[in-house]
Image 1 (cartoon, one colour):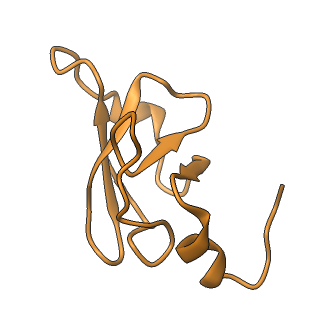
Image 2 (cartoon, rainbow, N blue to C red):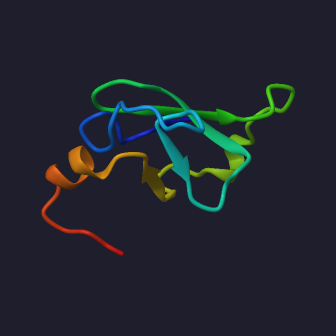
Image 3 (cartoon, rainbow, N blue to C red):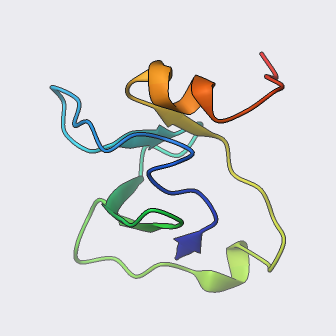
Length: 80
């Protein structure tokens, strides 16, 4: 699954628990590869397949960056 959030929206810094960000309410998913513009998501359990029907085009997920400095510098609004 490709999301419109990459290194400029998040950060490339790894967390001690692994990964570059978490997905709120979805501990079964992990962000595993990032470019400047996008991030890829997959199931944590490699024996499971991602149900793409669950993620319609335009649906939203809440990403929690590991490091807020870079993420905060890129936006003029924040929703807490």
